[in-house]
Amino acid sequence: MNGVPSFGYQPQSLVQGTDGDIYFTNAVGVSKLDSSGGVTTVYTFPLENPANICTNGCYPTSIMQGSDGNFYLTLAVSPGAVAEPGGLGLQPGAIVQVSPTGQFQLITPWPPTEAKATHPVARLCRIAPAPFME
Image (cartoon, rainbow, N blue to C red; front, side, top):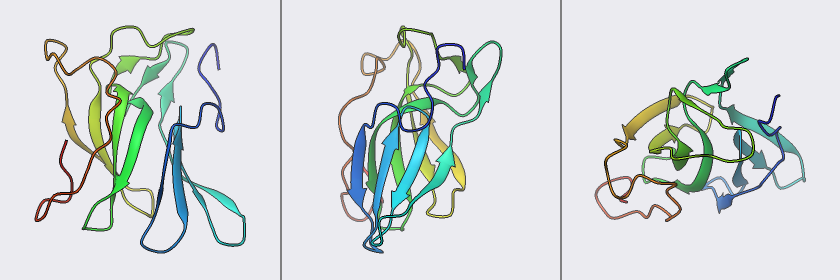
C-alpha cells in the first residue's frame, strides 16, 4: 500500500469489552479477539490511493469502551489527512467512535493550531456521566 501499513502492523492499544472479548487497534483499524482465539475485523479505516489520504483518519493510538457500549479512539492522523510513508508528519489527530458492529462516527477533530494536536498518545478515560473524557 505504498508505505501505509497493512492490518496487523503496529498494535497500539487494547481493552477488554463488556462482552469479555479483547478489542485492539493497529495502524489501520480495530479488531476483536474472542474467547476461542478467533480474530475478526471490527473496523478498517478507509484509505484513498494513490495519495494515501485517510478518509476517516487512521493510526489509532488508544481505545476505550464508553458507558454507552461504543469504543472511543484517539487518532494520530485526522480525517482527510495524508498518511505519510515512513512517518506521520505533523497531523492534528481526532477522537472517533466505533460501535461493536463497526459503525464509525467522528467525535472531534483537533485543529492543527491546538497544542494538544500532535500525535495524541494519552488514553481516554470514562468519567460519569459522559461516555469518555480526554
